[in-house]
Amino acid sequence: MVLEILTYPDPRLRLKAKPAAQVGGAELKTFAKDMIETMYESHGIGLAATQVGRDVRCLVVDTRPHTEDGAVDVEAMTELERVVVQPLVVFNPEITKTEGKTTYEEGCLSVPTFYETVERFEYIEMNYVDVDGKKQSLKVDGLLAICLQHEMDHLEGKLFIDRLSFVKSNRIKTKIKKSGYPTPEEAREERQRVKAARAAAKLADAE
Ligand code: QAP
Ligand code: CO
Image (cartoon, rainbow, N blue to C red; front, top):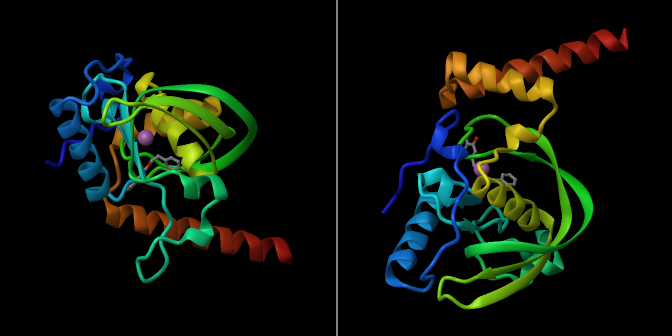
């Protein structure tokens, strides 16, 4: 079953999720399945329970890259990413170790059409409970590590747009509250406008 995804500024995105009890039970198994289905249907790489209006510590991710013919592009994954079976269902995650910093241009299904560069840990170790209720741990880097940190933020009521500079964050929040989200058509036009403006600026600079 595809679930409805909440978008900023929905106040339910600000709730702190509670630890999941009875992980491995039928109800949470069905919920995890629905989360994965919802993520795939929206072409997302990660989804947290908070985004579908449930305050339970659960998230799903599938950051595997694909080649043009649709196959998983193992070459484009890090060695640590290759070891993790995806889609991955995570209950009650706890980060136990971090190393380094990295940046990535992130998006979010709850802030559609907006993309900004965010800083995260480069490498993480994490304890969690799997969909069968079994304790697990993982060590990962790459996009998978970035995505897990983004989804864990959701469980704390935090969005990637909260991690930008004060000016950038407020500009985006004000714009959304005032005008809502652009349609996919409008988003495409905006990207073209920015591209043309950049090209014009580059030409003027060369003179
Ligand atoms: C979080 O985000 C993430 O704006 C997952 O129009 C993203 O799946 C973590 C999406 C990047 C790390 C890096 C966003 C789909 C999907 C949109 C997503 C949109 C359609 C976002
Ligand atoms: Co998100």
